[in-house]
Image 1 (tube, rainbow, N blue to C red):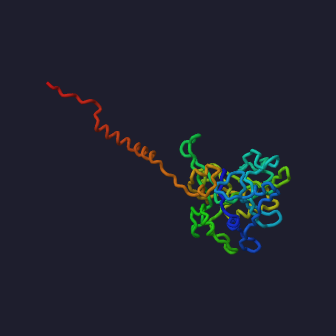
Image 2 (spheres, rainbow, N blue to C red):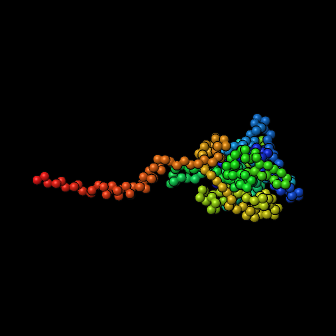
Length: 323
């Protein structure tokens, strides 16, 4: 499952972090950044990507996909949550939960099978995503601890885990045609996208993140996980399906990820209106002192009782006869 992501990067940095090897020149190439098409005059920025450490469904986030008429890769903001083809009205008013799509039923899904059949495959890029783990026994009042999950950084280049949420670390990254991107690694999640037209004929691009059963990497946190793209070869295969490839063949490219890292973050991220980078920064959980004291006391209880039993007689002593 994936319901929150973080992407605070400028378009230029995202282009460099998503660079790929051009088969013709064998040099690294940046995807072209395109703004979402819009003909609106009342609110021309309604389809714009705004960096945020707390992206929620219906927000426009960067998506990587292949151009229709060329081999060039394109980065473009799309709305998170695929709009049903039959929907009438405002793009965000369809009322369905479409931020994720389960890989197990895509071929039979009334909503998603069209995008899959049309090979409308894409990759959602972000610094990472959030997941919540229930602490203690599960019930409505049980607190949940948020975690931030991301692609392992290249420590040999001087980037550690904390660099994922550090704007300065991303700005230190460099790019060249020979070496590509040398900064922190961006997270890539496989998805499907579609183009829906509103009543005025205006196109709206929207997407859903493909999820699958978690493997041992994340099953301790949640039973579902996004389909993560881990290698350049997997990225190329996913975004360049053969013309005669079946839907089943395409989905076989996606596997549960083995290389992911994470750390705990503040519950500030629970508030969808909180967008600052503190949401994605490491937050060490402070141990409850009163709970620790009680736990330690309980551990000593058997010994204490034993000592008390030795000191306090079980019966009242007999008084000596005064006679």
